[in-house]
Amino acid sequence: MKKPTPQIAWLKEAAFNIGSLLGNLFLIILALVLFVPLFIVAMPWKVWVSFTRDNRKAREILSGTGKFFVGIAIAIDQLGNVAFAGLFNDVLVKDASIFAFGRTHETISEVLGWNEYLKNLTSTGKFLVAAVNFFDFTKEQHCAHAMASGIDEAKYKIAFQKKALVQHETIIASKEFMAKY
Image 1 (cartoon, rainbow, N blue to C red):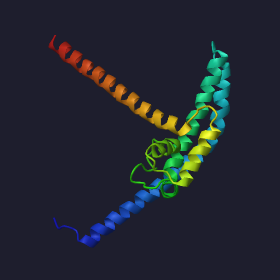
Image 2 (cartoon, helix red, strand yellow; image 1 turned 180 degrees about the vertical axis):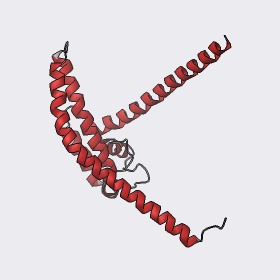
Image 3 (cartoon, one colour; image 1 turned 180 degrees about the horizontal axis):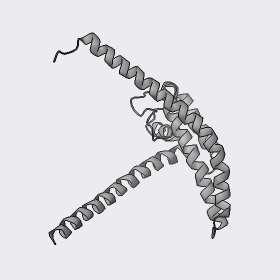
Image 4 (tube, helix red, strand yellow; image 1 turned 30 degrees about the horizontal axis):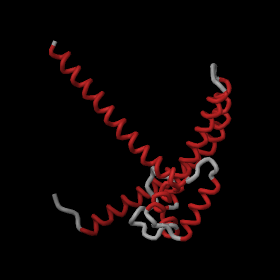
């Protein structure tokens, strides 16, 4: 079979990249279009379910509903970290190669915490950290706490993976043992 010319290969790659870009833009638009009506339905549903479930204590109702809203806030924060990574890397950090914004599962506060720890914040970044720390009255050092929670999340995932692997190996060994008899 004849190998395509470099121009043909380049055109195929360009067409694929353009198609991927358009597809990803469509997914963003679809996610935004779906998010608004679903959020409008989910908010009152969560509150209603929290109050109407049997045998729920007031503390559980408030903490469960609070976790719902915190989870949404974290997801939006992660979205902001990815969506505005270029701007944040230019404005908030001295050297983006040290610890950049833009990783999908990190919050803006977590990245700010790491860059504060690494002494890699611009004056604007330092001001933002001070403002976030001031306005979060639930924690003393919000960004440092966010950085630590990222570490805790990674530790949890590693422990979960180890446990799942042991369970999987046990199942395989049990099946092999049972197959003998």
